[in-house]
Length: 139
Image 1 (cartoon, rainbow, N blue to C red):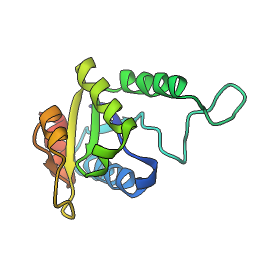
Image 2: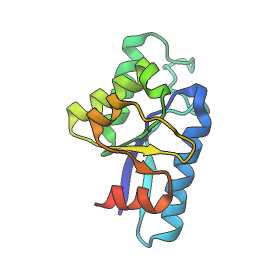
Image 3: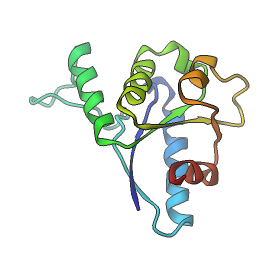
Image 4: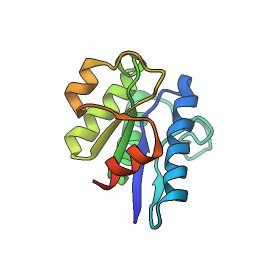
C-alpha cells in the first residue's frame, strides 16, 4: 500500500528530515507492499511561486503547507525540543490534528527530552527505527 506522508521539520534541521526519509526507505525495502509518497517541503524542493521564486509571505506559505498536509494521510514529526520552538512545526501539527491526519512523533536515540506539549497533542513518540515506523503507520 502507498502511504501519503508529510514530514514536519525545520529547515535548520535537515538531518532530521533525511533520517525520517531513510526510515521510510528502509521500511519500503524490508516490507513487501509498503510504499510512500512524500509531500514534505524540504529545502532542496521548496515551494515556488508562478515566477519560479521562493514562495514568500506567511499566509501564502501557510496555505501551501496546509495543501500538502491535506494531500497527506500521515504526518511524521521529530520528537525533539526544536518542535517547541518552531512556530511552523507547531502550526503544521495543530493543522494536521484538526484535519484528523494520523500524526506520529518519532524519538531518536539521541533525544533526551521530548516536548510535553507534543506528547499532549499526538501521544507518546515511537522509537526512531524503520520497524517502529512501519508498525505505527500500518496500525
